[in-house]
Image (tube, rainbow, N blue to C red; front, side, top):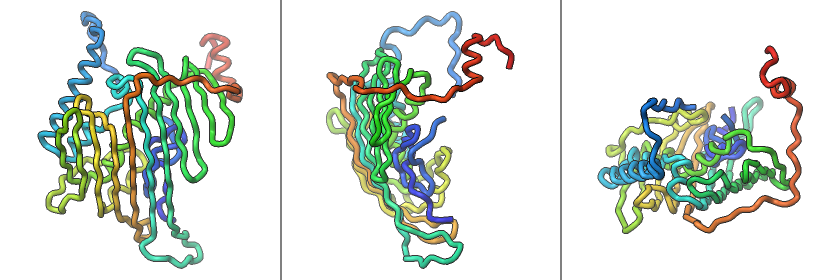
Amino acid sequence: MPAPPIRPVRLQVGGLALALVLAGGPACGGDDDANLPVAEAASLPPRPGAARQSQEELARAAVDALLASPSPATLLAVLGQSHLVARALLGRHTLKYTAEFSLTPVEPVRPAVDTPVLLTQKVVDELELQWAAGPEEPVRFYLSQRTDQHRGREVMVLDEKAYTRMLHRGWHVRPLDADLHQRWLDEAQRSVHDVVELAAPALAVAAAEEGDTVRVTLSLAEPGARVPVPRSAAPGREWREKAEITAVEGTLTLERATGLWQTAEIRIGYGLRDELERALVGETHLTGTAARTPDLQIHAPEHVQPLPERVRYESERRRLLDGLAGT
């Protein structure tokens, strides 16, 4: 089998993802529930703002734990917040990152009959998110993601409509009838978390409070100081168990009150072998920014066409007969 393909990872934005160079990581794509707690009959409705207050308290507690005991585990706990939480705490905001991934053979390999060719692979992935809704307002956002491999797309959700445009094509629109966009938003928010998680088995963390922010410095831990970190069970990440982290450097700034990341620059080097035991060296480099933008507004695109769809006869029958038809 050839060297693990470089696939834009974990922002598996329905077809495009935060390109983490995996010896099998997410590339453009993927779609996919947790049981919600049942409220007791006598429970009172939450007070306005109570959920936000609870989120702020949890976020501050996580930052307190990071400052008291800096470690990969406490840092990942801070960075693991969903976009649902982030937008409740931030309101309107923007998020951008550029991620570069490379995988290179240690030694040149002469192609042989029936043996996969081992080539240098590289991907540059760029993402921009504009969230234009307040805490209690309907979903309104614009998301753009593209790679230097001529793959990309734009997604916009406004007023219960989803607008999409593939690279070099026109805009299409359809009713918003699913919540797949929430996965895309979560993966964008957790992009820094995913890169830190890659380095976690060999990561040293230092954290210092600086006014309204927390500055986090990342470096390679000495072998005797490394602390085991539970591995992610997400599909496509098995290669990480065999990767040896060889270099880590980076700096993050977090908002003290919420723990949400504001800036990030992380570079990670690692070595691994493919299924034919050929040695490879990889590098991941991510830079990103996130900021509040209270006046942000987005508008529907012009020259939009309805999204063509094939007829789904079973769904159409159920809709027309209002569920009365037998199956």
